Image (cartoon, rainbow, N blue to C red; front, side, top):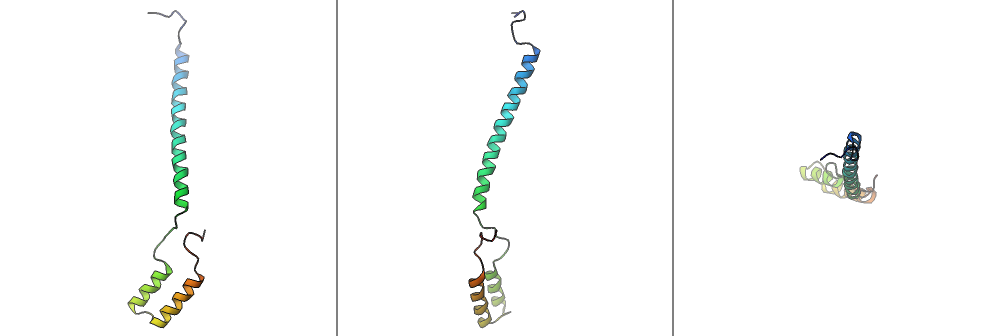
Length: 90
């Protein structure tokens, strides 16, 4: 069946294809942006731990015998009094 010029021409098909591809690309990019943004907020509230804490390092030194009990207790008190909690040192 022929449309005799009343149907969509070649430029109309190209425009429809390009607009459809752009629409789906924008939709997918939007979903990816939302997922990344919400994931970033969840990760931001988590403390960043790189290696052992100072208290763990001190305990390891005490366990190896590098320091005595008096030194361990004194240093542990100093660390407890001065060290900020993890996650608030941004």
